[in-house]
Amino acid sequence: MQANSRPTGPTARFLLPAALGFCAALILVGLIALADTWGPPHREGSAPIQQPTSIAYADGRTHYVALVRTRTWLFRRDDTYSLYSGSDPGLSYGHFVDIRITGEDHPSLESADWQPEGVRLHLTSGHELFIPAKEFTFGR
Image 1 (tube, rainbow, N blue to C red):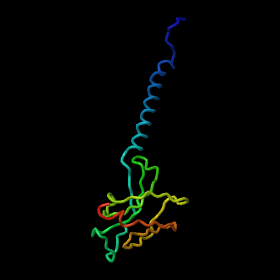
Image 2: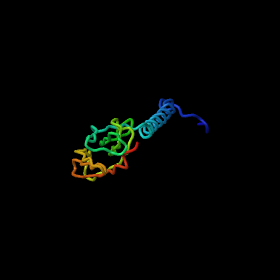
Image 3: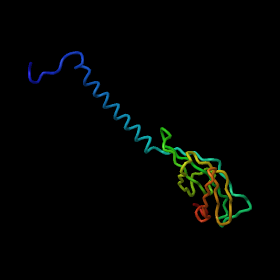
Image 4: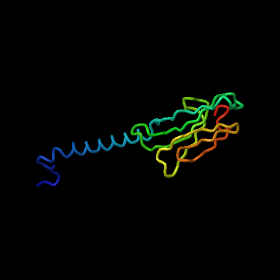
C-alpha cells in the first residue's frame, strides 16, 4: 500500500459530499437562527383603551393604553410584554414600559382608570401600574 493513497471502496466516494452537505446544513441552521433573532419583531397589541372625553391633558390629544406582546420574527418565540401609553391608536409610537409578572404567563389588561395625573392600569392578575401623564403626553 502506498503512503499517499486515497481510500477506495463504496464509502470513499460519498464521504466528501456527505461532509459538505453536513457543513451546508449547519450554516443554513445558523443563518435561520440569526434571521429569527435579528429580524424585525412581531408585535401584537390588545385592543387599546381610549381615554374618556371627561379627562383632558395639556397636549390636547386623545390617548390610549394597551398591552403589547412582542415575539421574534420567524419562530414567534421569546414572549415579552409591554404596557403602551400614547396618542397613536395603532400602538406604534408612544411610551412603552416592559413588564414581567411572576406566575403569569400571558398577562392581560383588564381596565384603565384615567386621572388628570395619569392612568392606573389594572391587570387580570390583580397587579396595578400607574403611568404619570408626563410619560405619554406631548408626543411621547
